[in-house]
Length: 147
Image (cartoon, rainbow, N blue to C red; front, side, top):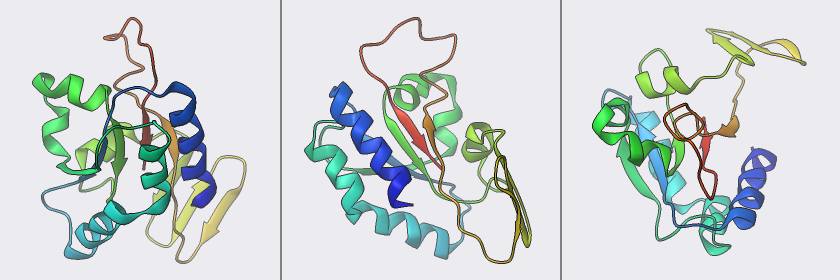
C-alpha cells in the first residue's frame, strides 16, 4: 500500500497544481468501509501529497454517486480520488475499476501475479479516468484515482 500511495506523492510534487483529495464512499457502504475511509483523512502519505503541492487544502469526504452525474464531471476530473469500498456496491468504484485485477469472494487475480486466495487487501493507483477522457482535451496537471 505504501508503495502505491508513494507513487501518487511523487506525481503530485511534479505537477503541483490546485486540486483536492476526495475520499469517496458509497452512501450504502457498510459501517466498516465508512470507518476505513474516515481513517484516511489522517493518512500520512495523503497528507504528504498536500504538503508537497500535489493537492491544495485538506482532504474531504465525498459520496461516490454524485461524482457519476454529468453536472459533477469537473469535480471528478480535476481532483484526486480515493475510492474506498466494494465495486459491487459502489458505482464509482465499478466505473473506475481497471482491467488488471478481478476480485471474487475468497479469490483475487492480478495480471502479472496470478491468482491468490484468502484474505487479500488491494490498493491500486492509476490516472483519474475522468480527466483522461475524451471530454478533456488538455490540462496543465494530472489527477489520480486510488482504489
